[in-house]
Amino acid sequence: MPFAVPGRRICAQCLLTTLLCLTVALPVAAQAGAAAVDEGLERVQVADPYIELRTGPGRGYPIFHVVDRHEWVAITLRHTDWYQVRADDGKEGWVHRRQLERTLTAAGSARTFRDIVLDDYLSRRMLAGGSWGRFDGEPMLKLTAGYRLSTSLSVDAHVGQVQGTFSGTSFWHVGLAAEPWSDRRLSPFFSVGVGRFSNVPNSSLVSAIRTDANLGQATLGLRWHLSERFMLTADYSLYTAFVADERSIEYRAFSAGLAFFF
Image 1 (tube, rainbow, N blue to C red):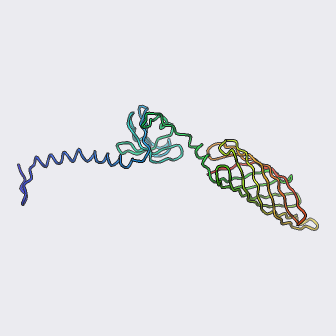
Image 2: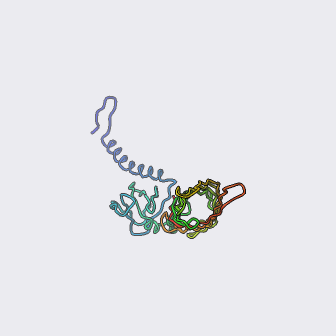
Image 3: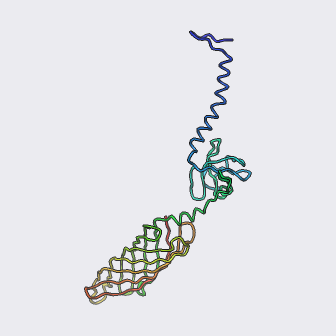
């Protein structure tokens, strides 16, 4: 039965047909829109019976959805060893790297995900840490910060404090460090730099005179990547304090400590 509308007649059958077409077309359009959004993102196919999607990047978050075998997911975000993925039905969740390692690429080959810890270690830029050692036989505490200019060169800054029996010494120096095997877990380095040196004798000593001087430094050391973002450091340094135009004093120091990179 036609509906009467001023100036028009609308057929009920035509209206029903239009609604059915919209019902079918809208999900297809939404899926096409999602595919357009995912264009440019890496997509992998599930090879296991299923993968589990969690609400957050961690095993403490609940599983709320599974993606079955042969279905595709797009990788949208990474957080440490967890990846946020989007399924073809629009569901988004977090998957651990180990599950994604058992997925397939569009070419049908296995997708490899290198250990994220190794990636962070190889791409590290800044380093900070502290160490303890001996400076000319006296206990020394040293703080270190560094910035990598390239894969093998970095700028390092050090601040140290020595508490001796008869005097206290403080120093700082900035230098250039060469680390030719920076991609290895155990990596030697060599650095040279300049800074300032200050020695303050105990006030109880006779003729206690403070000494301030320019400082030259040469260091040979090792860095050992422990795990995550931490590494052990050890170094041996030769310091030269230029206390006068024709007089200098040499000091030897070694230290070991812990550093982290980011």
